[in-house]
Length: 118
Image (cartoon, rainbow, N blue to C red):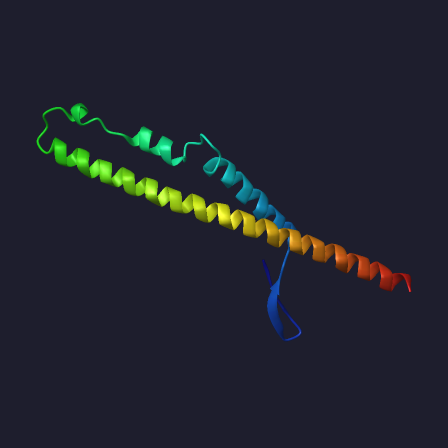
């Protein structure tokens, strides 16, 4: 969004190219984080971060370390699920907003052409 200060008026003017660019970037992020089978898919994160307690051998505190790792990985998956849900919602809302601005741009263009033709 572009900040404008003109003639004593302050407000925000929407730069639709900037808005559409944001939609594209968000779409790309969504492709990385929301696509089935992506590295950020909760099931994959769980599998990729699994720690075999036997891998620690007989180190002192191995069981506690494995348990802490398991809880941290579970929390990471919970946060990832929340982030993915927010990202999906934001992507839909931003797409709708961009569509509304595009429609408004089209309507304004039509009105300006009609006025210019008079």
